[in-house]
Amino acid sequence: MTAARSFADRLSDRQAQAASLVCVGLDPDPARLPAPLSGGKNTAEAVLAFNRTLVEATSDLAAAYKLNLAFFEALGPDSWRVLEATLRAIPPDTPVIADGKRGDIGNSARFYAQACFDLLGFDACTVSGYMGRDSVTPFLSWPGRGVFLLARTSNPGGADFQQAECEGRPLYERVTRAAQTWAASIHESKGALGFVAGASDTEALRRIRALAPDAPLLIPGVGAQGGHIESVLEAVREGSGPVLINSSRAILYASSGQDFAQAARSAAENLRASLAPALS
Amino acid sequence: MTAARSFADRLSDRQAQAASLVCVGLDPDPARLPAPLSGGKNTAEAVLAFNRTLVEATSDLAAAYKLNLAFFEALGPDSWRVLEATLRAIPPDTPVIADGKRGDIGNSARFYAQACFDLLGFDACTVSGYMGRDSVTPFLSWPGRGVFLLARTSNPGGADFQQAECEGRPLYERVTRAAQTWAASIHESKGALGFVAGASDTEALRRIRALAPDAPLLIPGVGAQGGHIESVLEAVREGSGPVLINSSRAILYASSGQDFAQAARSAAENLRASLAPALS
Image (cartoon, rainbow over all chains, first blue to last red; front, side, top):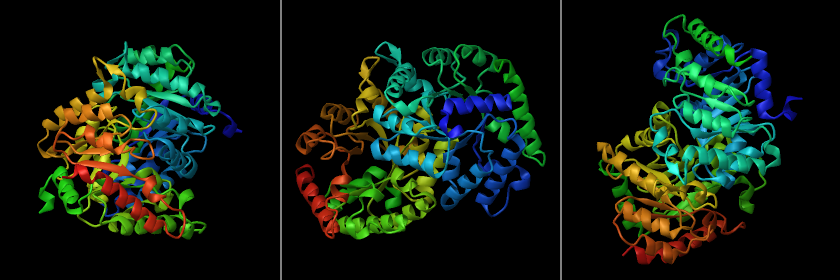
């Protein structure tokens, strides 16, 4: 049944089921593994054990997981296997986002989408739209899968170009508007197009939400990058699209000791609780 | 010795050695393998055989090779092995570019660079700068390695945002100028920063060359995407930075028959000859 539902609907289903807006970001840094898992010879196995433990500790609290592909790619020849095994550890009804920020055209985009959606089975992926229409639309044509297009990112450099005034609007707004017209022209894209909008710029968040009230929003930068939860929730109050608040380091590295799994769970629990007002 | 030289210098060395500006783009599409290699069960092995044959047929003519990571990623669990084996087939003094258009920040960018430069041994990679300064500078800090930052791409959608007038300049120009100031602040970045500038917009090519006369330029879109060689060479005549003219499909798929290797060689030879005027 779920295969017939759009990505936005499946995400909303899971958010209601888990009563959670929390997206747990898996950015497994070998240099930051907790004591019980660090120091071994086999980095890939240690990372996989770390991922499995974290998923196990948070699976009832997570509305979604986001896997940062850079951290897997750095594992070299083992990267694909660790990626597959990590994905298998995540409950099937919990959407998983491939955070690879791909951005290429035509066949290249289709091959990235094929690897991400068909081979690995991700439910959505992050996409960078610098190359324009033909770098985004191929990802929108996989029925039931989703795209989070980079609109306004929460990193310090996010303002360098995204905030630039382009023909009367900041670039991020131009990107948001353009992508919606592209999606509208693709039948399969219903509920597929979402946006990455960082917590550090609540004004941009408010604008993006106003421009795309039904679109899923992936919001990084709460906590570590300094976004305040109350102002973030206030900025996206209007509209019906599912909102995901991503937390990576604050959950993954809540403790570097024997209690790292429990500490991660507590961090996810606290974040879920702080987001509860936005669920009702 | 070469390790101490900048990427731009090593690329120039190879261009002089091969008397060539040709970058052979390896975009191995399993659906387009020539007859002698198609139809088999093991796609990864067929793709690897295709890559090895093409490298063997063109290695004396190529100033550089560009591997499109999307086509490898779509091979799934075998992707890393096929990537490594393809890289081993390329002569060590010929620079190889990882065309992955990565664009992420901090640790993510460093992990991408580590996989690309340290684990796989690529000489340069393509980078997308939508996320700004902190998504580009980590790639510029690997001594002797290079970056081709997306400036003005040759695809139809390339104009959607790159041509948008941002505070008085087209976005691609703003990106070019900003990246140069970033590179100037990084000691290790000497000769590391180049740009992707498509053949389809010779005016943009001319502007980018004028803004970055010493920077390596990677120019796709000659032939298949309709750029005219004479006007492209004319547009980049000024300046001292090495210029690479990339050709992928026109070389890879010059023939789908038994003679595919010879046909690929002839296509590369013809392209090299047509670019000869720009070498002197």
